[in-house]
Image (cartoon, rainbow, N blue to C red; front, side, top):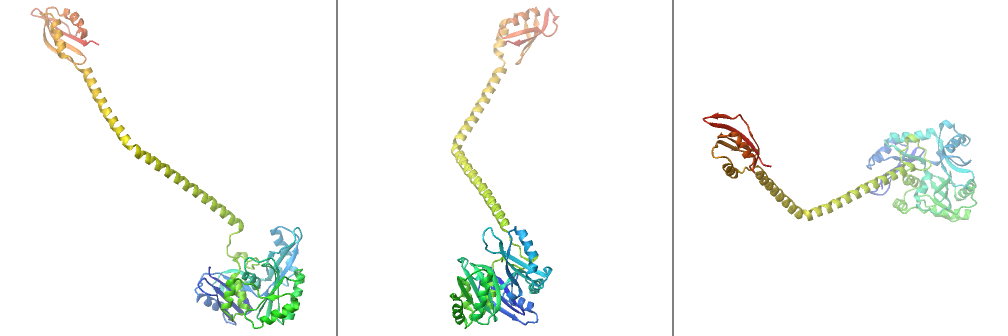
Length: 441
């Protein structure tokens, strides 16, 4: 458990208790000290409890506790109604009053019952000043005896119980329904018969004819057994010790010299983090998330977890799909390599075929043309030059009748479009010519 510290303020006497997970509870009593805050700070610092908030408990006689019946209203209207009605129940002015309230069990549809705790603002400021001077931030400020139910088991039957707690010559009297405090009183501890008389008077306040159980706690007082017997006789109800939680009973048994004051301080330590009757001003209270905030945070956490789960699921699905794709790629890789090799070989063959076709298209049939020209041209014609390319053939030379050569070339099965490309000139009885002819398509 996390370390907790508490201080029970009883006039000039301070009883402080510190509880840690490493060892038993430790108690310090400061009485009539010139600087109680410094003594309190030194006691906590020596135990290595720096930074722990201080829970403060007031003695019952410093506060007014009273159950009230009010008309049913919304919570905000009820708080204003209590503040307005409080002046009739406290002996100090409303502006100098600090109060807290908690709802009590009531009949459905009837008036609303609340328990109010009120004290002077000066008392609250004095307690807060002590905490500040000791270098501590306050965690809660309550009436100490109202924390006693925190020492009980968490699951308690809804029984009507009167708890009488003796300490320092007085008795704190609590009326409980289960673990809920219905009212409280403090009276001098004159004797068991006087206590029984005060218990009967208190029963009229909570409208009980008789309690289901009576508890008496007073630390390790030697008179405990005698008081329980005499209370049982006076009330007609068996008086027993309260059923404390196992850890609390173990801590109390570890210190047999403890009196009732130490049990009150221990109850302050065991009190829940947000006691219902907290007298701390709202600005001094530690921040605690409300139920609405916790529900919103839980919904946000669920949405975030769902989003993360969806993202992880999608990632896993994609990873599995990619794994299947990679496995299929590895399986098809040899066939793909063979296909790539065949495609490369086919491309090489196509390029070779295209090259051969191009050569075939551009090849000039030199020898057949020479043979045909030899057979076609007359004997009186002779050639001075002959050039052939892929477009055709050009002849230059001399003949007896140059114009007669054009029809002869036109009649060739290899040539077409024969024509003279330059004027015919004569020299030494011969005609000089230049003829151009294209290849037969």
